[in-house]
Length: 341
Image (cartoon, rainbow, N blue to C red; front, side):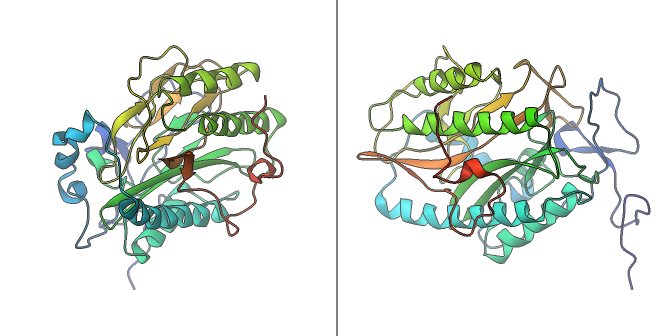
């Protein structure tokens, strides 16, 4: 029997090392950085998901179709038939996130959660969109405590009181569906709970404004108003984005006030809203792995995200929670949700 590779006893075929250079290199020791509460742990070698309809970057790490697409400059209006296919993809992405959230508990590593995400999406005939996207080494993003986004699943066991964001994107039948949620691990303090609720309110206040004719730049005004009233800040370095046949494309959807996003919403536009909300200052820094964005002051961060389509009379949230989604926090239930600060 082949011995199992662990961080304490790695095997030659499956070493555990620290990630560097946006996934292109590895290190034998912890890279130097002014770490705060959290430090990166070793990661396992990337998984493969070889299907006939993988995105073009699955083997090359370069999303050429995305880089060269005219959809980086213009917003496509998807047809009802295309939306139906995209909806199926979003259902798979939602199922993967729900499976990961159910497994998130004290003592479980984010590497183990990544395996669950990978297995769920591939079992449903899809490809986990983050895997090998510009060399990202894992199938989902797991961002703990002060990590804002793009955290790499690793060997660190989750601890009581952690806050964990899981960001999942699935690629199926030529379309990407993207969503994320932040959850408490074990017993979180009240300050962390307030942060999570603030991030959730920010997302849904933004969604309330989605309709034909609404300006993309106005989303940031609504998000910032809610965040500031609840003593939180809005990250400015990362934003929502168009999605569909491409992982990232137009429109650009900033979440902060006084942004310069261009364009107005039209029926058939598909995009994400995903405000990143910090308990402290909005400024961020990046770990030596080239991916992991953290709060510069070490404060905690929370985020929620949905993929949605603009309809004739408003919005349809394609990655919405359903009756099978785990009830891990009360403010995700419609009866408890209020976007009032």
